[in-house]
Length: 304
Ligand SMILES: Cc1cc2nc3c(=O)[nH]c(=O)nc-3n(C[C@H](O)[C@H](O)[C@H](O)COP(=O)(O)O)c2cc1C
Image (cartoon, rainbow, N blue to C red):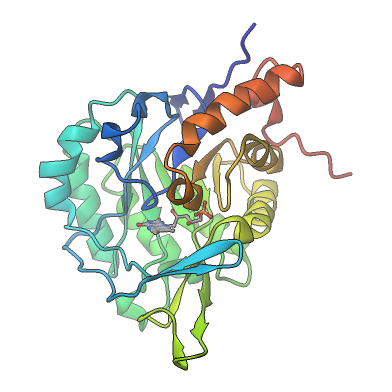
């Protein structure tokens, strides 16, 4: 018998636990190259209330075992998304998760209010990694109070499940996770990129125009796993794990640490066809290990 890859996330049934991470995979766009219906869920690039041009180039730099990006949530705003992208995305069978970002609490709320009227959205992911302009530019997700304010403001406008995507650039991610859950987050996505930088020695300049960027890829996998594990011990809501996942074995590590599903980010940039390969390998891996369902792995880490 074929192993059952399906998982459940806040009432959403996913045929498998694999989905792209926000911003790492062209949605819409990739349907021209692969069948998006094989994925567990679809996650769109973060959108903001108003269009954002993003940061000036260069905004990508390669690093050992990963990359730095400082794209800066370039997007055309929520109204453009509703009119242009959503009509294309809502026709796919996997649940669509729409990611919302913002620089003011009220902007998150207004974006959610506009999206809530639209059909074909299964859930939201709240990206609290944007700089909070009302509080001097630290990311919302770096403060429990600011995270709570954003989640509560979005929660008021939606009946759909809400996942809050946390930044690892904090002293205690458990404290932020608990704040998000208290404010009404139905699930959590862990983690966004780690703040980093790279230097061009010859030119004596930073490699990124923005100077600082977000580190992603295999380099951050141990940090992401640690965050998933710590948070899973402390909260009861489902967790979507993300950070350096590039293989079926990586997926199983995250599930064992406590994730119910995972997102693939930088690995899509290295190989745009990697997600279907991971799904096929995951099925093979389970069969080889005599597992009837992928759900057997969720939170099953033995750490005693
Ligand atoms: C080019 C690029 C753009 C990204 N854009 C977003 C975004 O718009 N919203 C978001 O929540 N995360 C964004 N991320 C972060 C990823 O979704 C993911 O959390 C992070 O890269 C860690 O996963 P990975 O190591 O598998 O890439 C972006 C990452 C990259 C590399």
